[in-house]
Length: 225
View 1 (spheres, rainbow, N blue to C red):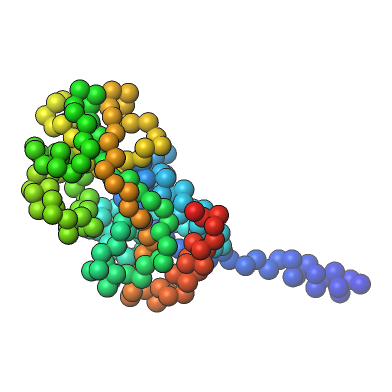
View 2: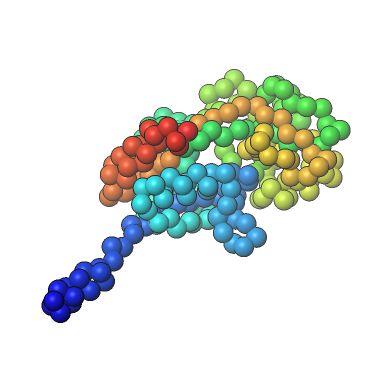
């Protein structure tokens, strides 16, 4: 009996390590950003956390600019997300079959500024945009060329809102959420479109296909949509 007790005690000490993956995110509130405690936060981060937990993975978050984050995907980071992947992006990444969520693209403006109801409304004057947001999925639209020439790039959302409130610019083109209040009571949000956001992993990643098979199986479940 004493021997059996020793065997059971030994077995109980065996701990299976939880697999870990890393996820790159950038400053795109309210979907992904770093909160005041220095932690990854936002609508997208909540979805990623829930999905990876269902896969049995522990996730580590890596914050950086979009260009540096994309380069990190080749060596340092496992996953990130892409909005409405283009043909070129599909050549570089293994992409989830189904989107993780839908993102809204629109403008933030002051109450006194006329609303934007179509893309043509945004082609009358320069507008604010985050430096890292390239909106690659809009490149094929007829308004893409004049739209890109009117963008005034800023480093972060706080700078954009300061310039917006100063009256120097009328609109801030960014990702928004119609389900959340604007960043300040005197601001309004106009939604211009909704786009699918997919999880991606570099085709150079040694476990790209294996990881994405797990992700695709989970995203097919109705409780993730």
